[in-house]
Image (cartoon, rainbow, N blue to C red):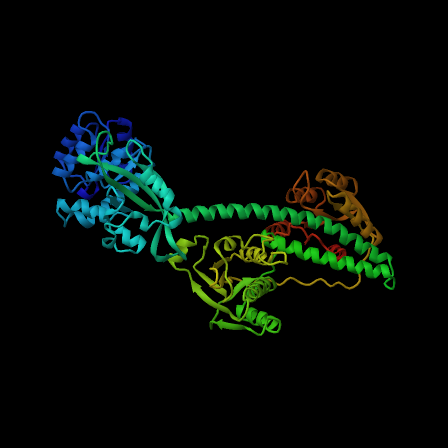
Length: 639
């Protein structure tokens, strides 16, 4: 085992020593233990160590004293200080004495392992070529965090190189400059309270977050979020404030921008999931109610001659019902609970169709530009739904332009880079087709951009605000992702990533809808909504069928046992006492030759696929037109 993997643990808590030795040995490190500072000195005399993990509080020779000894006599050994004090003042003292890093008990072993790996990397790159007097400087300069010191007036007296790496400002030019010059204006006053005005025994603040200005473009913002641990410094190089003169502040600022972004994304996903669940439930109940309206309308159509005024009134009801059905489809699209009939699509064709449709409807002052890359890969999707998404995006872009402007539509193949994937881990594939709509309109502020996908949110005086929300649901339902980049007064760019097609989706045969078919077989309707049962029974009884009804799964099973003449069951899979996926095999066990059509107010791809895979003859989403259901029933019975 080489010097580069030797580790010494010095802690008077035997349990910590033994557990850390076991875990580090399992990771391939040669690990020794010492329970006192004196034992640690003896171990150091026996052989060299790359890293020493030292507890700050020990009887006899203390942690700081041992670290001073290591720094003087074994400068090639990096020290990781551990402390049980929440104030971390002793840890700061350790850093000033040359510790590479510190951990506050209790800590996760994975955290210690990461710190040790970083320390060993520093050993490999620095220890062999630099003298002991430069080791401390090298470690500070190579720290992943900003390490700084302030004089009593709050001006920078020391800054490491990470200051320039993270913020883009030259560290040398900020020596003697107040720290408030780089703090985001909105955070200055509360930062002063934390760092200047608050008085504690050690003049410290821990885990405080603030924003620092940058000279870089960081995710379209001009600041990063850092977590600051700051501690007062006193004369004679001690951290105790009792009877000592305050000489400045020592601090560490850790960049947590990406961490906070991921947390914000997680909260946003949770919020969106809750909204989708609510929206899906609303659409489900609407679908059940619309099924009743549609059913009675179809029933009355069979009774009223076409030349009467009442028949025209029924047509108005049907048109209003169709509009509501379209609304529920858009809600279900947002909640990702909609069936997509997918097939390979060339987005060149999609763009050309949409441009042809909108070119005669937009204002002459708006110019449409198209950039279509050659040899575009195919994507797999529902052509109608993808056209609907693009149409919404283009119309939104046109409406965002107040006077003259340009809407640019581009399509190209893209390969996801590691850097982009790090910011967008939801992209699970390497290759996508990128559809982008960019406008030169008014743009959105941050608050508006964050709410752009919320259902019913709109900045217009009229409209339902479902365009972007349904587009989001459609794209996610296709395994894709959609992003908005916008700034007030600088236009908006909407980017849609769609995965490549892998196989051809079979086309579904269209059902002919000529005359409503009739016959006299016996049908079992399994539906827990009484009003839906009533209209369904009346409609199919008028067509000559014998209709039996059941409102629960148990009723359906009893009905099937007592009526051997049942030829087909129309089963709602959302039953109060048993899910349709569980009920179906029970029905087939009683009557193996029974034919079944499943239906649901939740037309999910997965539900339809699972039910068809289980063996049902057909599936129809609610709300359905009763003549379409009649076609399916006749088709299934004649199979």
